Length: 352
Image 1 (cartoon, rainbow, N blue to C red):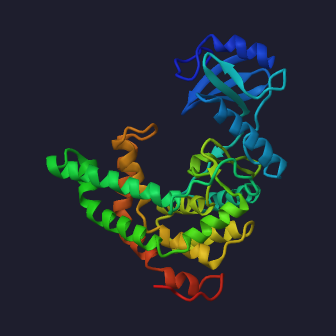
Image 2: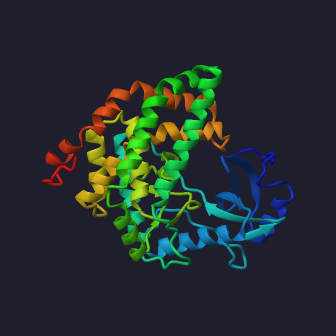
Image 3: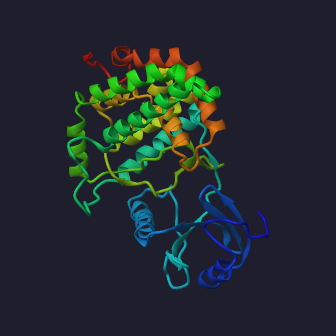
């Protein structure tokens, strides 16, 4: 920890004495990381996070409380000030303080980590049910996941068109150009196939059950402690949605680091199912939706859209991995029939 307050968009020097007074603590140092600040205090290590809207701060603090009351304690825990408030307004922003979790980020290259994260996700999904709809469920005839994927594919097509017009200017653009045709074909094919899947039924079931999805199950949002516990953090993206979207995102991200091994997919699904039941139909839908090249499209559109957290070097590394594992990915996607004929989930009649 540094003893000097860094230049950070989320805080300034004047907030420290105000925090010390409100939370009756002494702050010895601050260290920025991603979109939060780590605080070293005489009451332990805390994490400070700021929000522009009070409603967002209220949502995450209340959600954490409800999840913990429902038995899902392996998530963030907010600290109250001396008046019992968990939201600290300061200069037009709304801050929350969380206890820091002593753990390392999950590694999708480790199947052991993947399985522990899958079980934690299942426990979160169990607790994230029976949430009454505060407003009408967002539904315009298709799930939000499909709408997002259609927009992402359209953005990717525009990027590739511009690259073609001026010709690739660097290694990343060269790879994008080489992979574009297959990626666009796979994206369109998966989106067309998605309309034949029972996603609408899944969506309506989610509405009836009042389910929440995390919607950002990246490996850095799973923390593994030395004692063997696994925590799911960052509740900012949680909202009413099909929990299936978490599983598609989780499997897609981990499979890249697992080199698209079918055995890794099966073990991750099995780990999840030890806690939360999945039907054969749900597992089949997950496998089919993984045909959408989301890793590639997300990273490319992220860096070209100047979204926070996306940098050319990291995106280039991921795109190179996807290019190298092209055949392994295709083999995985073509193994749907094998998946259900030889898996522990029993006999399943292949729908081709």
